[in-house]
Image (cartoon, rainbow, N blue to C red; front, side, top):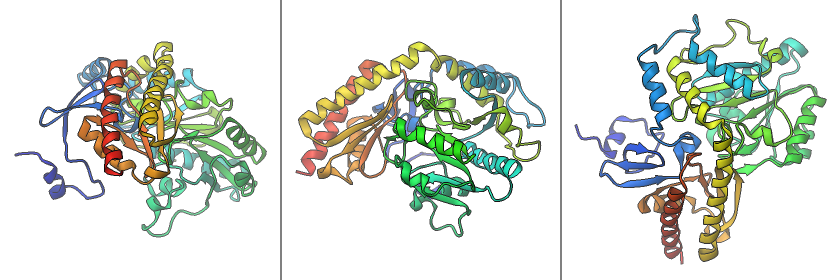
Length: 403
């Protein structure tokens, strides 16, 4: 049976609108489609493929574990899950780990834990959750309601209550609504879907202080910013503050589905047996792959290399902008970068994405005004140079079409 893009429309729910090309093979930061056309991957599956495609460490870990043990219910534990949890707690502030399958599930667990902790420690009045406009925390009904983009949560009936949204990077906006009824503040230290906007150190420090003042749990959603993406294992390490709960996914498995919630022993104690669970969370295959990814990513060489690669991207984008004048600024940290379009090209981010694919380079958007780059953390300099040459072709094509 021929597999074509048309088959998608025949058999799939239409909540996605994928490109016409269908990739069939990947190696490193390069992907080939059904016609054997090559693309350089600056998207990384939206900040997921942190070691590129088919990295030997991942392939070996998956193959080895696939010949041992695939699945156990959480009536039992398993060696890969325990080894990975130990590595995560050794490397972070956390003392306890809960495994899930995705960022949304990790965030769902974090929000439920924050509510349960507040209920049991402070009482029923303390149940309000505050998050930020343009934030993104997943697609479950609870997490999409906490996320600050109404377009994703409207149209599904009554939303979970007790959730408020305030302005990102605006401490006064947060202080105005926080009270002793606030049980948690959920925030991305660097907003991804919302336009690749970093939280300032002063703002994040103020958020931490307000949480301390009102005995509220601070949840850092590091699903996109975490696992080496910004040049440290987690972005909170660069902020000077520590969250109470941290969520992680995407790059955590390098392409194999896995998520995790990290927290302290004191807070974790409130998810007693039976209060929460997941059929596949802590799956031996996922944890074995994630452990292999962590062994590569959490090294001085790779994390320092992220900062080098950030500069290579910034330099290349600056040269393109000097020539074509399309970007207002390039923002972000490490290899989570957003090229914000200037006034002339606002609303046209998707045109750059489409033109990029036609030129043989995969990029992302973050809203209608920002082109997003989230490549492999170990992408070779030659791939960046060649990918940027292709991206310049795309920029030239969009500029010509809009002149």
